[in-house]
Length: 147
Image (cartoon, rainbow, N blue to C red):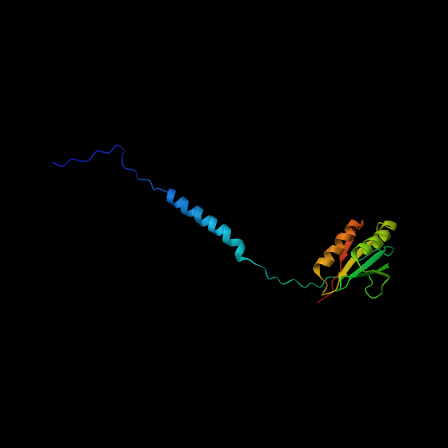
């Protein structure tokens, strides 16, 4: 006669997922640690767009600010965007802010357009824009050339 062993608990037909959860958590930590190290930089190609200049009212005062590749600033004050002539210049961004802030304080509707040399440092262009903002310039635009 065959005697069956008696079990305290009956057979379970469930899958034990605890080891799988442990493996998943280890993999998650590994991916979270290694993912930032894989991407060092992203190569982008900026779009070239042929855009027309926005029409400006005839009586509006416009300051065309140019940032040279050495970090100096010069600008022209007139009724239209003029990139050829130069009204004034400043060797530093602080001096530029004081002079252009005085122009904008005299006429708050003054529009300022910024153009930068192709080889100008991006940080100096952004620093110049930040100084203009500190000086009270609220109407700001960027000038580009057609491709």
